Picture: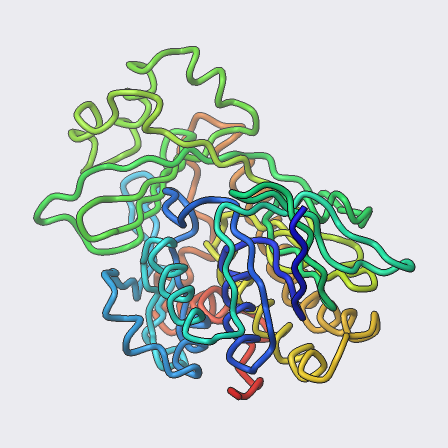
Length: 406
């Protein structure tokens, strides 16, 4: 078994892991990031880069180059209920450098961060390497056991960070307790082609007991169909023609593209929705961040951005400690103390939307609902649209880069 050592080892090369790895390496900390796949190229991941994340890129001096990557921009958000359209979000007045959501494939975002991080000699990215277990020493986590292209390896570290997603292996091995907050729905992801004359927007459609969200991606629409929890197998059993008919009934102007675009269920990907969070995010030597600490609903598309905020806070709090030595358990608990408040607020909002709106209007009904009062209010008074835009675009307690480059 190969043996390595580093100051900080991070399991997971997603948004939280890559951002934390970059920030620590930039500050002179020796850091090793593990990514279990051979590349970042996986479709139907969170592709919404919110203004809060773009602000972080600006503070790092990376924004101008980052925005040269192919992306589309969303400044307003609306929803169709039956035959009526309602505007409820306007990001154009946010107090940020970028007053829009950048729609960018997550693999491009991660490739960009990885490329920048590799410029630091103290950054090490191990692809096709998956964390399998924790190393313990004297009641403290002292690193991980992993498998890579050359077999098994041990990586000893002063700090181990679990950023390996909602199915975190390290979190399961840690014995930390997860509180499941519940999610009554799942999501089916698919693509429909873009055509000249299509609107450039985020479009939500609610009609006849179905909800369909269309995200403008330049040359195609990334679409999400909301379904009851666990209904995926039953939908497949009904057959492709019935599924296509279901899509045509809700896809609006894109209905005539369904038959050509969806020729097999392999083109439809299931996102099993979960909303949960750890009671405690840390053990001595181990810290969980991002989805490993709190799985988010797709409501608001905030998961990637909350994970990045976790990474920035972690770097701000633990970076100065790691520059000098090994963080204490009390240091690790400061990260949870900082990030639990926004996590609770956002999850409370998501639970409110899914339990008070989605469940009765979509999951337990086959009728088009009456528009709720708050949508009518936002649509009638444009000034009010800044409230949901700020909440989703920036989030409660946005983080700023404080850890200096070394």
